[in-house]
Structure formats: structure tokens, C-alpha cells
Length: 474
Figure 1 (cartoon, helix red, strand yellow):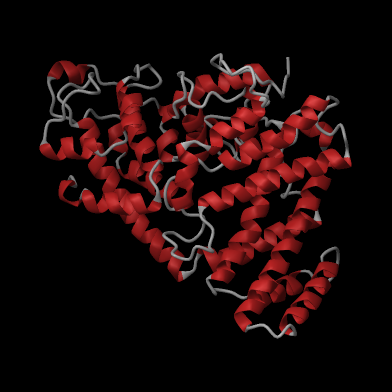
Figure 2 (cartoon, rainbow, N blue to C red):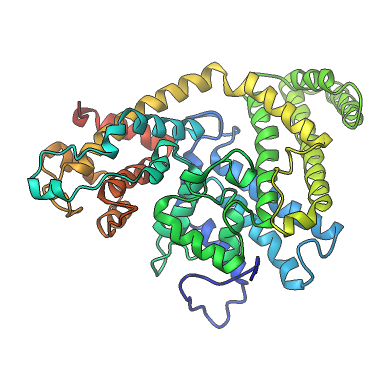
């Protein structure tokens, strides 16, 4: 039976009698005070290792997505009181769950943004033999106990996905008082999952299967979420559409604003681009308003730099407003299909003026921000650092005295030193794991590597690469 607002947790919790928070508010608080959220302050949004504090990090981006998601939820409720359901409890819960899902949506992203994901995948692609080969000069009895990584699970590493790592972080690795990570409610976990299939089942046919949402090791978490909420493979919780639209709105507008702050483009450049793209139609009115606002800024007698900041602010406000209104309109138009879990296209990939603007902004950002010289150089440096780190840590993870004893002593000073640099919480999860047919020892070794690398901040990754230089394995 479908219960999309299920507040059940995997482990029972005891709360003080005077704690008047709702279960969903507890979820938000647990996320906000968690270590992965703090790490986002030093993770790339667009510009890696950025020194300008005015340019967004992954943390500022996540806070903005959280705010937009909550605002969209409130807007929908005010436009249609029963948009999510008839009860007052649902109306109170939806904006809080949306704030949580927006805050958490990028927690699993590795350093250097999506290029970090690509770097992890490339490392495993170059070392594909490790899926099948023992690769250690240990005793024959241990070699006989080696099992290759199942074919269906290899995509967990070859197509490493930050969304799946997010579910692993909040549902497994981040400790509270029990074995289920932050022990979030089923509804909050479901709303966080843009993708609801494993790596072996990802398909481009629908939004929920375009990428994968959980690793083989977390199949039990998704099974539980599915049982509790009714969200099944290839479908989405109704709030996940709003969280996605908030993310799409944030990065399509605000990544461009950051490019303006770095003076890679100007507000006038974007206005001219939009004027060429939208000569007539729904967007022409906003272009006229922006023309007037830009002229006002130029006539205010402020410096050119100040005028540019004012124009960027006007641009940001108007564009976000247009995308938010467009997303919520589409949601209301397709509400029945969304609640029935049958919608397939993202809200901002529909036949609508807002979708046209979203596509145009992404095109502008690709041309003027994502492929700029500073971004490409920093991404290259980051990719080189991650490759060094992974090669060295792999040797440290696998070079132990007994293959089946995951915590046994490392066999060389290099291995012992590098293994000591791995987070204690990740090592604890690894050393206390029980191998299964689907997640044999080799899978667990690879997962410790991705846990550690994806949990690094940009600066930490660069520093660790330098620390490990003497211990790099050929």
C-alpha cells in the first residue's frame, strides 16, 4: 500500500518528552549538523579551489537548492491547498522534506564536482582486471577464497554516481546511535532519490532511470524505502520532482552568475544572448524589464563594478522567478500523474517557456563557464591528484597479510602509512562488513576506496596527493 509520507525509521528512536519537532524536522536537523554537509564548503560547484568567497561552493549551492525546494513546496500549497494531499500534516511536512532533500542532494559528490565522478570511473576502467583477478602474492588458501565482482555490480564503480553515494552516506556510513546511518524517515529518503534503479538497470528512457540511485551494497535500503512508501524501481516520490527542478533552477541561473563574478562574462552578454534566443513570446516581457533595470543601474552614478553586481542581481531574481513559476505550473498541470508515480520527464524538460529558458541557460553556461580556462586547468589538476590517490590507496587497502581478514596488518611501511590516512569511520565500515555473493571482498575493497575518495574535499584531495607522493605504487 502506498504511503508516500511514511515517517517510519529503520531503527526505533527515543526522543525527549518535550521535543516538539516533527519527525521530518528531526531529519533536517540531523542532515544539517552532519559531517558531509560541512565538507560541502570545500567542494566544487563550478570553479574548483576558488579563492573568491563570493563564488559558490557545493555548500552554498545546496543551501540555495534547499531554500528553492521549500519555497516551491509552499508556493504549490498556496496555489492548490491539497496539491500533495488533504491532511494538514502533509501540508506541514512537504516543505520540510523538500528542504531536507535539497540540502542532501549533493552530499555524495566527490571533490572537483562531476569531473571527480568521471575521474573515479576512469580509474576503474583502466584497472578493469581488478574485478576478476586476485592480484596479490598472498598464500594459496586465501587466493582460493577470492571471488570476482559480479557483472551486475561493476557499474557501481565504472559509472560511479554521487547520488548513490548520498544514499550510502545518510543510510549507512554516518553514525548516530544505530546501524542505519542518520536513520532518516522513509519519506525523506524517498524524496532524496532522483534515481530509483541500481547501476545495472539505468536507462535513458525516463528521468528516474537516467542514472542509478543506489549501490549494490544498499539494495536493502531501497527495498525498505520502497516497502514503506510504495516508490518502486523506475518511479519517483512526488517531492523528488520538485527537488530536481530546484537543483536545475539553481545551477542553470547561479552558475552563470558565478561566471559573472569571475568576470568571464557580463550581465550584458547574457542579456544579449537571451534577446537573440527569445525575440518574441513569453520571455520578451522579462527582457524589457531587464533592459529598464540595466539602464537604471547605469544611471545610478555607481562604479562599473557595482553596476555589474546590481545587474547580475536583477538578472538572477527575474530568471529564478520565471523558472520557479514555470516548474510549479507544470507540476500542477501534471499533478495526478505525479501522485500516481507515472510521470517520466523532469519538470524543466517539458514543452514550456520555462524549459526553453532552462535549456538556453545551460547552453550559455557550457560555452562561457564550464569550459573556461580556469575550470579546465583546475579539473585537470584535480583529476591527476585523484588518480594518484586512488592508485596509492588501492595498494594500501589490498596489501594486507590475510585476504579474508580485512583489518589484518598491512605488509609494507608504504601500505601501513597510506592505510592509516583513511578515515576511521570508513575503515570501520569496511573491516566490519560481511562479504556476500553480490558484494564479495573485492567489491568491499573497491567500495572503501570510493568511500574515502568521494568523502574528500577539494583541498584535502590536493594535500593528500602531496602526502602520498613517496608511497605511490607503480
